[in-house]
Length: 208
Image (cartoon, rainbow, N blue to C red):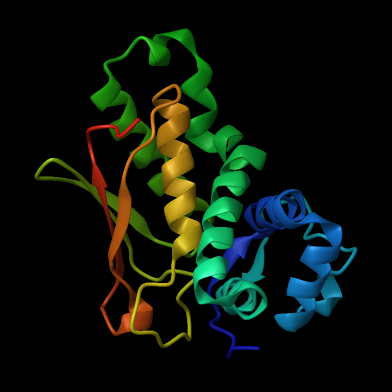
């Protein structure tokens, strides 16, 4: 277990992540990952469905590291991407401002505006309901999604970015707001690599 950060996700967002792992890996796979991460207390005991900020960033980082231990570096990366995408589908898409995405008025907006509003809504959710301060800036040919302190990178040291679950969340958010288009999301800076923050570059042109 990594040293506790004193920074937290609300239980509800952590619960979405657990439900996503159960969906992607099955209950046995989830239990193994929890055990590897030193989080046996959560086996058969999901975080409650409330907004209390009680799920330490170190727990999230340990879960993501456990995925790499279980599936290898490459396999763990792919699994974290899938879990991130599933966690958005499991609940984040109905969280806060993102709940309005299904409204016909939103669906009638131009694609670029929908993507911009969706990313900003996601950033606001993380900033307002957790200790993951996030922001969005327009860049050449796309967007930069910046996370001051990423739960996935807390306490970790790596020569490559490790916030694969956040990449998956961003990918699925964009697919949701764009009505099915896929976008290229690439983590260009990561706390685990010694950078001052985590940064994700997103092309504004869909790849599919």
